[in-house]
Image (cartoon, rainbow, N blue to C red; front, side, top):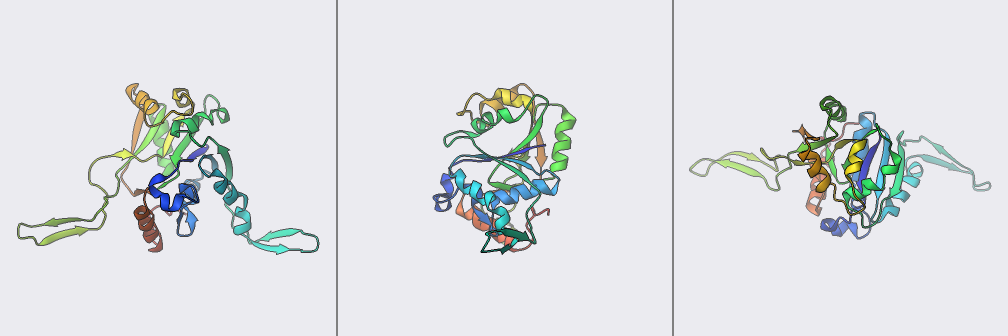
Length: 257
């Protein structure tokens, strides 16, 4: 089963980083968040990726074009120019890099990839800026079990600030630093779609989260997979710094590899 990663947006709220590179290439622990997302899918055996490019897509192309170079030791015969790679740590991935338009919306990027699929196909889609400890195998099994066209992963976003519980005298009884919000679900990406979902798209300016998903929901063809574990998107510098702190702790929940 193929996994599409939407990696073409401008990332304007992270402009300190995205003036030079697309948001999926902003690093956590020295590797792009795009790589972390792909590693999550790969940990469950899904190694066939389509990266939907747009803004500064050449940066992503260059990363994967030179991936083996940076993940291996090298022996170079300077006279002949022959190069040999040793101790290759490259992943066993197939990565297709498709330019889906600089100005395309999320649904438009999928619209421009429709030719890669055929009736009867099932595929996964997610955003290029969010990590989670989601069990992909359970997600896929859930999608197959309900028989509808689309599954959306519903998540609880992390709070922006720590929370406290105090008694009437002001004594703090409980303190939690940036807990997951206790109630309320949002769209966390990590979709599973049947081929027919592509028929709900209408050109490059289609916003997936509006007409297509709204229509699927109204037709009872969209089902939520409730992921009550870790999920965190990277919209701001604060988000990036927080994710880097989590990674540096050695206890990143999304690290399933």
